[in-house]
Structure formats: structure tokens, C-alpha cells
Image (cartoon, rainbow, N blue to C red; front, side):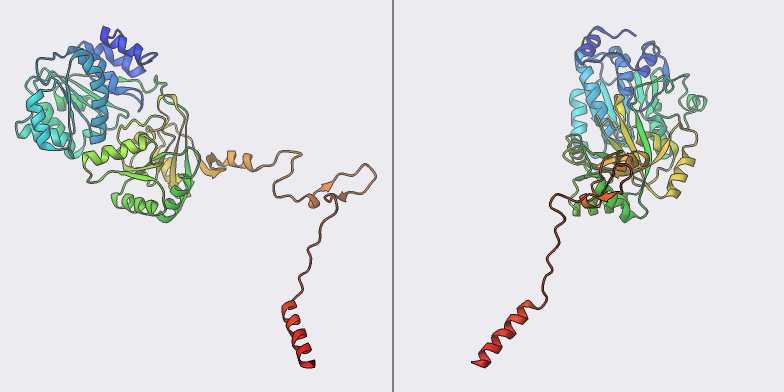
Length: 438
């Protein structure tokens, strides 16, 4: 793998040591113009995996040549930030086109700048294409990120419509952390391209140690109370996942009322509001970011300590993507699922084909611990007094042949003075008696 001179210099300046498994595996095939399906764990650097080989093939004076399709506004903005950093080294321009942002301004900027790279969500890209504000006749490369999420239901139809609008010679790349329904033969027929599958999940070592477990909380109220308690533990921050928007907003309202610093990512929010919520979370101004699977898909939150499943994911792939938000780039992490023993059994059945070990988790000394760790903390060390023991209750070991005696503190045990009852009334009666005698 040999990066261009500009990229190699910036690679060193950024302090990168070596490319990840997926970055190395896809570089040569993509540089050679092959259409690929790249599969790698979350947090393994997939954005740079397609940035490095594709950008050097673009020309600054030939309009829009690369389109990157993302499933959410947040991921589109995140990808825009990463690609813009490297694109400017080659004099290339980047523009994001997402729903929730001002449409008129996006159109004006498209006409004015003619960006070389467009990164957007399917709905907004499809709308701009239908209104003829987005021109795709010069596109040479298309990337479909989080492809297993985009190539389903109505979203698949929009993505395929965009792919059909680009020249037949365009290079296509599909990236994801899970295979899902991405059967190479089926996808090749859909897009009318030969696709090379590059799967590095077994070779990738970028993920740190992540604990998976269940925190017992039976009702919705119990779960909200547990989130409040978790927010009070040491250095705790978490993405909290919901499947129901209604439950999400109910929980957010309850936590805010309890004074817990939370933010919400999901539902009908403006782009600026969503960016504010993410910025506050990344800057540690809020401890809990309540979100849905779609809103948090692919998000990169550096050194995120934990992920909490307020509600069970609906599929194994959804759990993998949720869990992938923590333990990134070698950092440790914890994935907690709130629920009952029945929920834990259900989760284990769901994840049968995945190599996860689930344990019961609890909070001990303001830290999340496994049951075994919590018991070890609670167990007193040999020869030490427990904090609850009173000096006069601890028996001293007597020499051989003598009876054991109770050790008392120096000066003996002070007896509590018995308070006389009715002392005040007794004094009043005595006073009245003296007045009558007078």
C-alpha cells in the first residue's frame, strides 16, 4: 500500500502508525478501478479506506465525480469532515447534502461551487436529482456506506435510482460492518457490476476489550431510574439506544426533570439542532445521548465508555452496530442491556452466531462491575475489620489455655445516660405546690 505523496506526509503528521486491515485490503483493488464490497468491524477506519484510493483519481476542474451515500445526517456530516481534511490536500472541494438542512442554500452552493465530492442522504440526493439541481453525468465513483442498512425497503429503491443515474462505467464501492443481506451475487445483478468481496473481520484487531452484560431493570420506570444512577458513576458517558421514539422522548423528559444532563438525537430535528446535540456529547457537556439505530449508525465518538440498550435491538446486526460505538481504536468499553432475565435469554438467542459473552452487571462503588467483581469488592480481606464492626464487639484471641474475652475500648464502654421522663411536668407541679402553700 503506497499512499500519494500528499497523503503520506499528512499520514505521518497526524501521528498514524500503520493503516488498518480494511485500509490495506481495499487500497490496491480500488486504485485499480475495481468495484468492491468492503466488510470490516465498526471503528476500523472504513471512511479513510475509501478516501485514500478514490480521491487521487479525481480532477479539481471537472465538477462532481464522487458521490458518497450515507444512511443518516450525522454520518454524512461526519464523513464530510473526514474527507474534506484529505481533499483539501489535493485542491478538491466537498459538499454535504442532507435532509434537515436548508435546501435553498444547498442548491445555491451546488450551482456556485460545483463540488468534486458530494456526500449525502438518499432522500435529499434523490430530491435534488429529480429537480435537476444535482448533475451526475460526470460521476466516476460512487460509495454506498453502511450498505446493509441502505439496501433495504424504500431506501434501496432510492439508492438504486441514484446508481442508475450515473454512467455505466462508474466504479461502485459498498462498505459495512456486517454482511446482513449483502449477497454478492444478488447485489451484482442489482447494480449490473462485478463485485469483489473483501472481508477483514477476522483479521482486524482495532477493537479494544468490550464487556457485554445485563443490568436488571424490569419496568420502563426502573430503566429510567437506572440511567439516572448510571449517570452518577465515575467518568460515565453513554449512547442510549431505543427502538421507539415515543419511549425515547418519555425517558428524556423524565431524566431532564431529575436533573440528569441528557441530549436527544432522533426524530424531527433540524440539522443545526442535531449537530449541537452531538457537539455537546463529544465535549462531555452531557452524559447521556438518547438515540435510535438509524440516527447513531456509524457515529464515531472517541473514547466512548459505554453503550446502553434501553430496549432490545430487533436484530443481531443492530446489536453489532450499537456495540460498535464503544471499544473503538483499542479503547475499552461496556455494552449494557437493561432488562429482565427473560431479556437476557432472548438476547443470547439473538446473538447465537456471534462470539459474545454476556454477564450480569451491577453498580459497585460508583463503577459498573460484573457480579463476580462486585462480590470481590464487598468481601473483606483476611485479618481486617469490616467497616460495620464496632470495637467492643470484636473478640480478641486469647493465649492458649485462656478464655476469649471481648475487647473493649480504652476507658470502658460509656453507658448512655437515661433521660428522666416527665421532668418538665414534675418541675411545674412543684412550683404550683409552693404557690398554694404561700
